[in-house]
Image (tube, rainbow, N blue to C red; front, top):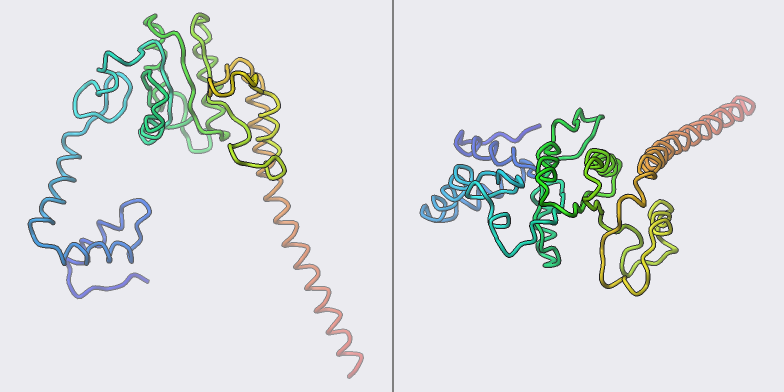
Length: 264
């Protein structure tokens, strides 16, 4: 049951804050009450900053990253390597990779991943514009920096097949496997299996963080199938466990009733 407020203005402010992702009504109320304690100038500055961001921030026409101009600072920087494109799912991934200071090329933001279950197909994300950039002839390498999920692997496989018409372009992906500091004993089978399938030479382990996608492209569908089957198996096992517990409780209840009837 939603909490009722004495002020309709307070109710409206809380309702708007509660529309933000990850913000419930209790958190929204706490934020609104905090703003009410601030002076009007600070609150006005806060509102203007949000409005200015919405009105003036747009998307780069080249890589689809957020930008205040038609071309973002990364694409417009002549010091960046234009022959290398790092493909990511969203803007937050660009920020994460930029924080490593290891990638000196450009980016391409897809704006999502292929997910038939959610109704997202290749036409719904920025794959066509990626193909156009590769077709220009300036690109020598495409790094697929997508999540190691069923949707991420499906998108990687589709892009790999889509860009296969340009064999001169090297297609790579982020290395996958056992995390730094993690023990093999506690690593899941799928992650460990990928580590075995795509090992790195020891003398190169500190010089590369990517793996040619051609070495694992044939296994993408298998990985997706295995991940899906594992997920279904876990759900099935959970259902069977609940059914087993229910049957055990039912038998115990029947036995208890039978004993009580015998005693009577």
